Image (cartoon, rainbow, N blue to C red; front, side, top):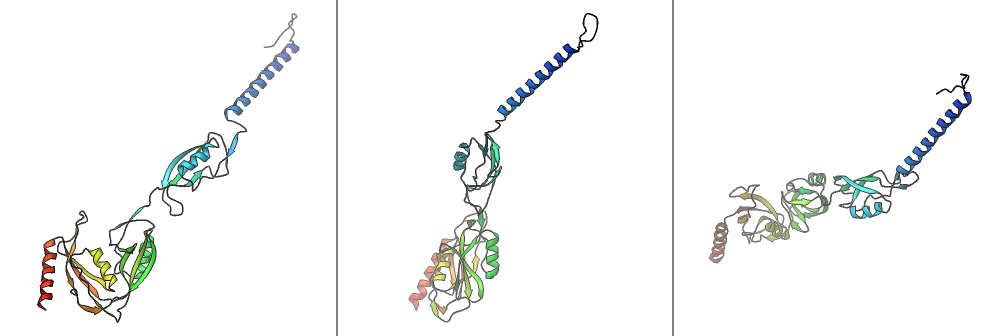
Length: 274
C-alpha cells in the first residue's frame, strides 16, 4: 500500500521499509521450509544398502535392521544357482545410497525343490534319455553298462541304487543313474525266480544277474488315479533257465494274489516231477 505524507505526496521511504520487511518475511519462511524438509526427509542420514543376496530371510532382516532399513518379499522364484529359501534379487541394489527407513524389496528362491515326474526313459537311446532328463532339471549321476540285446539303449533308471519307474515323483536336481545296454555277453547265467515280486524288485534282481526286463503285460491295465500294487505272476524264461547274459525276461503282472500262488505251485510241481 502506497503511503502519502500530509501534503499528499508519495512516501518512498515507508514503501521501501514495507518491501524489505516482506522480503525478510519470505526469506524466513523459505529458510524455515527448507529446514523442515531437511528434517522430514532426514537429509544427511543416507545409508548404504548392504548386499543381502544369497542370505536367508531371517538373516537379511537382521542385516537390514542394523541399517534402519526394512524388507518386503514381493515374489518367489526357483533357481538351482542359489540355496533354497535365500534371496536371489534385491531392489535397490547393493551399494545404493538410501534414506533410513527405506524398504528393500526382495525376490526369494523357493524353499523346496520343484517336483519332477520321471518320464519313460527305458528303450530310449542314451543321447535321448540324457537330453530329456536334463530338460526336466534332473542330473545324470552315472552311466552303467550292462549286457543286453541292443546297444546304447536305456534298460533301467536308478536313484540311490534303486530302480525307479516312469511316473515316479522326484525333486528337481535329483541325480539319476542310467543303465545302458552294451550288447549280449558270452557268459551263461541262471534266470532268478521273480514271480511274486513287484516290478521294481524284479528289475533289481534281473540287473544283479546281468539280465534285463523285457515286455511287461498287465491282466488289468493300471489306472493313473489308483495306487494299486501289482505283482508278477508269470515270467519268461522261467526261473532256473540258463541263458546268455543280457537276455530279456518278460513278465506278466496282476493284483490277484491267487495267480501268483498258482504259478508258484505249478513251478514247484514241475521241479518235483523232474
